[in-house]
Image (cartoon, rainbow, N blue to C red; front, top):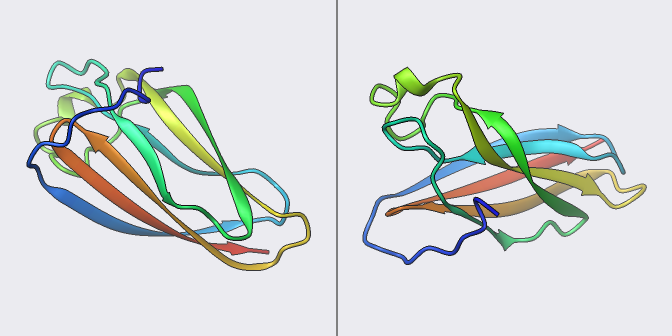
Length: 125
């Protein structure tokens, strides 16, 4: 599995981001697709880890074919890769049947020396 390879923690920059999403009760909803690529636009290994599970639902991870988007760390340095095919790690959320309200979870994505910690707040309708 491309993005499930464990990496050693080296001194690097941590980047935290908060996301707000909406989901329908009991239905699978796409939350994010994590991707990592090199200067040559080739896929790189990374590790996605759930730090805090949702209290009222489940997360479903899967490897997917994806395209490179804008890098949150170096948008200008990797702009030439935008749209190129790559492999990604998709995370979907499904609430418990009948649950309505707010749910939260946190994901850590490690690639090379960098660690991103993403916190999600999901409004389940």
